[in-house]
Image (cartoon, rainbow, N blue to C red; front, side, top):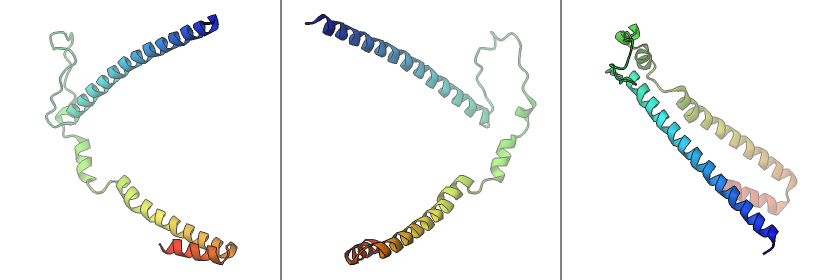
Length: 137
């Protein structure tokens, strides 16, 4: 073998090895970030739940200063009251399910009418028949 092909093969092997190491490092970091997101999601869920029991990050014996319970924890949650008031259909559902469907039908009808007008002005007899048959299907 020529020395250039051996050097190219060694260089390609080194690059592949570096890419594999880089990928393994990023996968470990991704796993750590996913675990952190799971922990934060669990904590937010516990904060918004009714029982108000929140596990501390450290045991109470390791905590130097005891944290007082905030006044908002003793009062009824404003968020839950607002959720009860706004229990109707959400605006995303109204826009996505109703308005966008109607807008799509309007655009489709206008597009079909403009296409039919174009085809009647510029196509021959066979083209008009084909477009009429396709539009009716």
